Length: 116
Image (cartoon, rainbow, N blue to C red; front, side, top):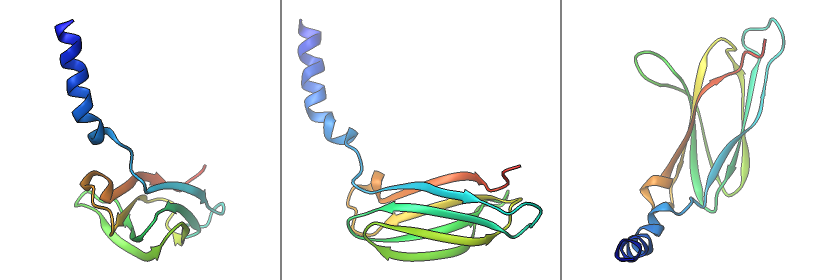
């Protein structure tokens, strides 16, 4: 019984840490045209209640290299086109008005557009 009381006490103070973020990102569209190297298209759905900065990076051995950047506000779809279909991409979205450090920057990595 004593252990159960300790568990309930611990959970009552730790639950705010496990709360979900208000903002989110998701891959909405990923496509390319066959046999055309720079035909990749990537749409990112951003759910936000404030301002954000969305950055598209190429993933390289030496680290990410920024290739496109988009600033926005509220819910929207960020469209990237003319992407190399043989590269690996990473999208990072920074929510400028987010106070929770865990939720301030969200990312999707290892995005491959080659759909063969």
